[in-house]
Length: 167
Image (tube, helix red, strand yellow):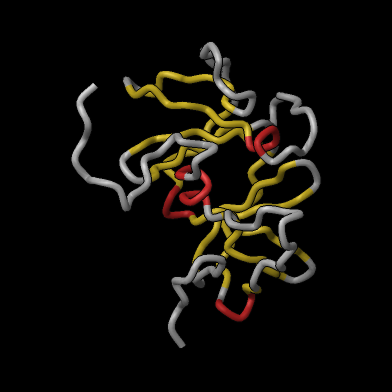
């Protein structure tokens, strides 16, 4: 059986799991560059509320997105457990703020179920599916699709031109 590449489906593989509010999420481990503690960021004027600002990561300016705010999961609190996951998506480096990082899990195709359809009530375009491990239910996020979505606009869509535009 081949892994499906259609939107809304997830392939077997390894996922970094993290928590937001009381829910557990997973993203493709191959998109993760590093995991850091949350530090102060430089705010950017007129940025959407979910963009906390930017950090300088070894000479690279990295936008920081708070997924708790982005997913409307309540007011974030930043403490010793708050983590920034640095992602490599396309040709961009982006950080996402999460409550805690859990672990890396391997999910086989049989452990991944399609995301339920909610009609127009809930946007599930950025979900790959739901992974199950023992009694755990993990919401698998298509982090690349989320970061290339129009409302995020942090990463150019990979289907667009590969040539850089002059600024």
